[in-house]
Length: 259
Image (cartoon, rainbow, N blue to C red; front, side):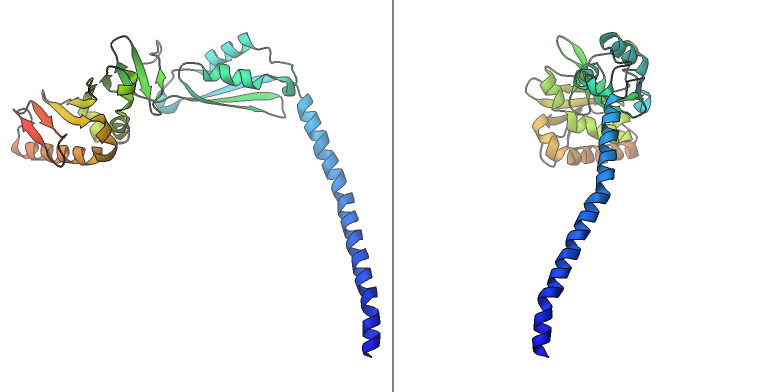
């Protein structure tokens, strides 16, 4: 009995291997038409001509530093796109041209099988209008700059700084104002001194609030603003917000008010 079982084992293994080979071949044969179809589709997509240019600009928070009609006119003037095969379009040069326009934060270009070239543009979001000795620019949320626009004026605080690098050092404060309606409404103008010290003027009272060196804002801005908020609450309870001329928050854990 044991001899019969032993003699049949090679036959069973051989049949199993042959069956596996047939499965592999059948799988390959079934996949071949699918692969050919995808290849044909890719070739067909490459041959599709560009029939339309569709540009969308994200009008974020009502801003319009740049608009779709202006970009459309710029692109059609510089590039011959219509009726050209999608595969031959100068997408890299097109992307660079759009990205270089004032107010453009990012640009995404997507050819479609229907022949439309879709362009999606996101605008820069200014956080402050920076006044420097030789020029005035906007500072955006990423620390980039954009020129003032003749078509739109952003409702952002004014920032006086000796250089753009000095202005960028106030981004922790500007981002706090961008996310906090209270501080956005309270702070009117911000100033950065040559030595890097940051101060601001509130809309209430003739007072200067000294925040201290810009390098310290990243770590201790919340604590300093919390001390200022508690101080204002105490002044409101006493009914006098105009008796101080200077409030200094630059000392660790302290608030020093001077009349």
